[in-house]
Image (tube, rainbow, N blue to C red; front, side):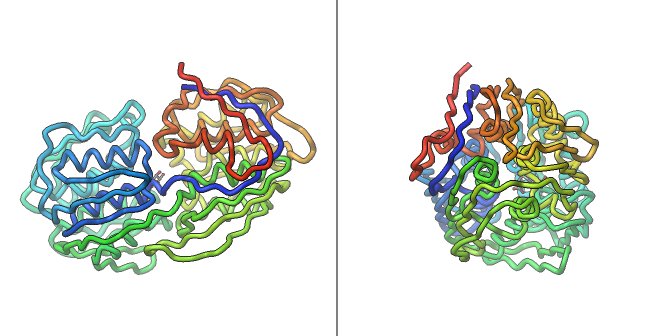
Length: 446
Ligand code: S3P
């Protein structure tokens, strides 16, 4: 599937983007090992979260839904998962594989986890190394890549582990294994990363100690089912925050967005660039902060992105590069080498596509230097045929880029947009409440 995108100048209206991917995964995983029925609303009906759901069905968990974002997970208790008869297919989803590796490591079962071509190339030692220290028996393919094979072990032991990189997936994998370990497991992170696992565990009645960068959990605790209201995903909202910032005239409100402080790097970075963003009606929903975000067009300016914001905006850099291309002056990103091991090498793939559009984007080992055009000057880069390498966020970023292109943008290999944002094209084509004709996105099946 590819997208053909034509630019327009005006965007306006109020939208709600789909549920948070990270929280959706965790709602299934924790609901599955809880006692009782966990009811979830706002669940992301995207392929990644569905991969997790199908995996837990194969592990013997009855799950009703999804039906308009509603899911009921009939928890089997902490020891109730069963050896699956089939490999657990994680599709494109690193979160499914890495968190499940931790959750399954200490259970008395065998399981194989596989993934698509992109996931099969992604590093898994970052989780299998600490899990091996805990006594897990997990083997991988060459180079520590998927598939992962998990074998039963008599018990796990707690560890005190310092993460070599800022990664919520690794932190979560170790904490989930820690639930099944003898003693208290502690993880120390080099920089704050998303803390949905810690928050949700507390919602299920588990004691989690957080002391600055150290998070500790005692093994043997039971989870009690609860209700979870999944807010809209700020990582999906990000495409519209940037779109509205760079469009000639825009006034968009994205409703009910999760603004957990470990996820709001996109807001901080856009504000530093001069974006016109307002957080309206802040509230708390099921342990997670939520707000409506209003964004109006503004001339962005180039900045040096502060490194401490990198883990807090880790999934938003593809679209932030497009913001930078439309900003006045130079934007420099450093300290973001993790982008090279996401669903694609997001530094290389974005630099290649931007260069095809005539944007001055220079990749570096750990980031990018982009010379922005300054969109209010009227300058535009050209449209191009860009390859998204099956990476959902690359495909959506070039769709946003099309708003400021002087000719059509053709985005190839866009089918994986369905992993995180199944109705992206619908929303992009016609923003509800808009008095203007919005972006034209024509999906092709090819
Ligand atoms: C995620 C953590 C991040 C992020 C991914 C989802 C999670 O990965 O990129 O999309 O749900 O824990 P890392 O923790 O590997 O940076």
